Length: 60
Image (cartoon, rainbow, N blue to C red; front, side):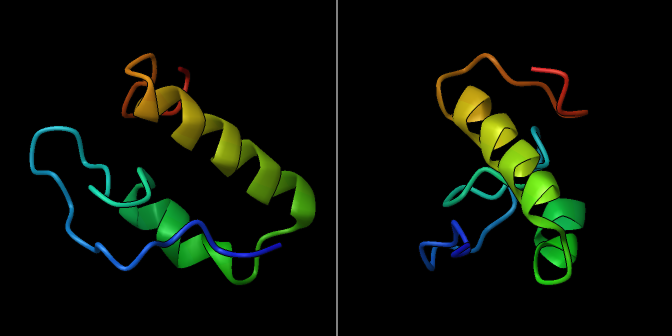
């Protein structure tokens, strides 16, 4: 599974999300070694964040 990184790597100080891919620093660091199931969960969180429904802790 490909990384959701789009090369806009800047963490928003208020949300803690990358402005490009909407992942947290922890999610970015974990991506490479994460299982496909974990990656799917991260992608679900980023989709919710992108539409404004997500939260910093990923409960979105």
